[in-house]
Image (tube, rainbow, N blue to C red; front, side, top):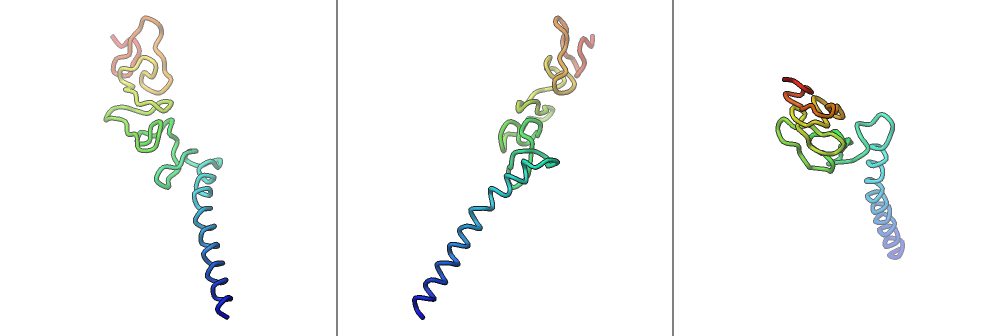
Length: 105
């Protein structure tokens, strides 16, 4: 009878360990599912680190006020020639980005 109780306790501990170890994989697979907010899991939330201002490039990396996250880098769309006004909006050669517009002046 004592051996049965020991076996039962060990079986429950093994089941608990398997359950706890499976949880992160399930969260990650949910974040990688079609239609989720992103493929990365930051603080149990699906995010896209290429565009998320509070997880730009990696979990927890916040962009400064006025900056946006483009391809995982914080940029200022009001003055960045490669991301003028929005991500991937490049100004033509010789022009500048002012107030988020190429060749404003």
